[in-house]
Amino acid sequence: MKASLVEAATGKCVASAFYPKTEAPIIAKQPGWAEQDPAMWLGSLKLATADVLSQAPAVNPQDIKAIGISYQMHGLVCVDKDLHVLRPAIIWCDSRAVPYGQQAWEHLGK
Picture 1 (cartoon, rainbow, N blue to C red):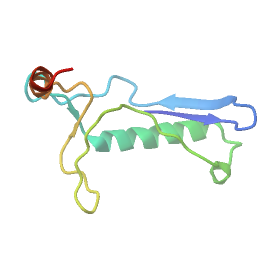
Picture 2: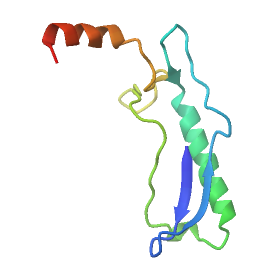
Picture 3: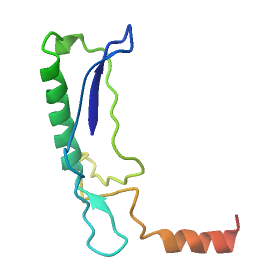
């Protein structure tokens, strides 16, 4: 998770931080599986945001007009009706569906 504070008028990056500082752990209970705990993403976002704000003490957080969030893509996060996470998120590098995609390719064509 990376956070940056950018001055809107100039596009100048005032501060930037990322977390975790080492590669994020991947849960791989079986070969080809790749999952992560979405709570780790939120925790990393909080740490990166706090780090950025500490690098720019002259900036009042109330003056921030917009945010953008970037991390990984193509992740499946299953939630219940109250938006509580039900299980670890299946992330982009999970390959357990490859055989199904290959089978569809062969039967349906390109």
